[in-house]
Length: 381
Image (cartoon, rainbow, N blue to C red; front, side):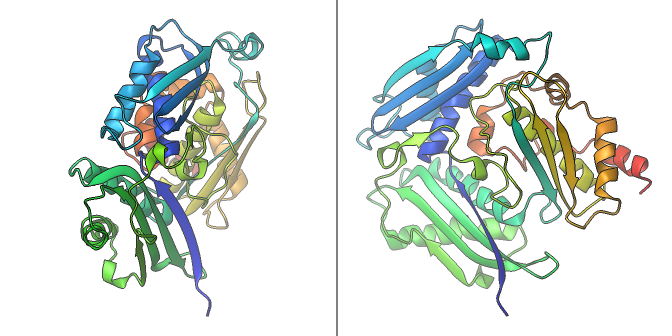
């Protein structure tokens, strides 16, 4: 019988696209730190010895964008001269202007409309304690562990990727881990076989154990499968803000509306409504109303209320999907202003999401399950 497999990937914060995401969100945080009403849409490009920061920023904050970018690069771990990209020698240029007055007409405090049209998805399921799909949760955990190791030895460099393939049964239950792929940038002094043993024993094995799996039971493990990985980061590939949207969400397990998160202030529903959709989905699952939930929201630019709200429980709900949709409408203010108030989004919390992930972390407000008991009572469950 053919296996039922699903694969998700994640990248470390030293991946070129994640470097760009982190710089954009670090600039957003710097603006919000001084002016919580800052309007920010910041895009970054990084390549060999060069960083370009562009976008629209309207703020009362006084921010040295170049210094913020250098510190973000330094914190990631690009501090080695001669690697082709490091915090002290990288050339940085800025092309920043204010937000379009036409867009501002529909998103100011009086109107409170969405900053753009579009659809956003949030999901949750019972496969992991954090109510995330197992493939992306494992891939994210592997990348987090890689980042920890980068900061504990000078033999590793910040760029890396992880990919996990999970086998499921006919009912969608987890059978086991079929394949793990890990690639990590390293110093030329780290011999490949020593590196592979280090990654297997110090990265893959402890992460799998934390989720209840034994590395000995995984039939396929690939570590730096092409061999050495010395040229990497922005020196090996150009990075752009917003190119890792599937990595940033659910690894393809749930749908994606197409909008990126990083560099955008919370009036942009691409970001804030996706966080709200995750919050609602997670609380429905935490309440025991379904084993798997996907919530979709959609907005029109300049209009406060969403044009649609939909719940899909994929046949796992103990009440109907329409009933759960009504439950959300009764309990949640889904206007941009309501989402910002509920999740307290006008504060500098975003660089950490670019670095450590947007979902599945207890320290983020949209990961709270403070509505689960209310949902149970309202649903009579």
